[in-house]
Length: 288
Image 1 (tube, rainbow, N blue to C red):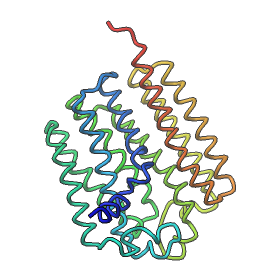
Image 2: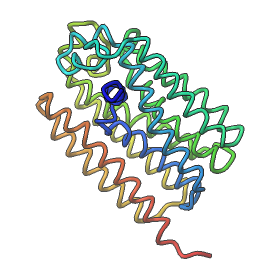
Image 3: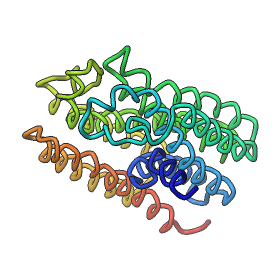
């Protein structure tokens, strides 16, 4: 039993929490802005738990979808399904259990949030298969990760205002940038086995296009700050985030796989910088 649980934990990538962080930050951005810095505790707990569950479910369905590809990629050939330690049917059952558990938590929220959750599950299940049909799976990943934004606003406020959609767009841009960096790590293997990605689509223009996406991301976050009436601490957080984006550009300058992976990981600090700015901005406000 212990060995099975260990294999399931590895399948859910609980030993590599970077994906949890990258999904958690936009949810926290949204929830703090939606609540003016005072989120409902139940909503916070439900969404934090939901992030862990849905990221885990996404990893499971991704490995199920890629089980025949992973054998041919050095970085992924030892994943539990590819290596034969977890059967594909087991993975599907685990995916279902994780999704149902997350849905059970969503049932504690309002009707709008429950309705939006169906879109979230659809996006999470659809993303892993996109790399077979389009060079833009990273955009679909951004939509799947970013869907926590309108859901958080719906749960906290009962509606999804324009600022929520601005933040959703920012999250899609962010995920497209960092997952392209991730795709640069596997580009040579992906070309051999026929998997599509933005890293392949962008080719030699990859760094310039990532830089353009990062500029658009920062512009979108500036618009979010203006729409939400945020102040100096938020913009200082964005300044730190811009510095981190420059550092990521430095890391990927030679397209060396290890450095590209480090640039991908560095996005955790980008998300933290933005959230810290939001958090401090609301903390320092004088109560009316």
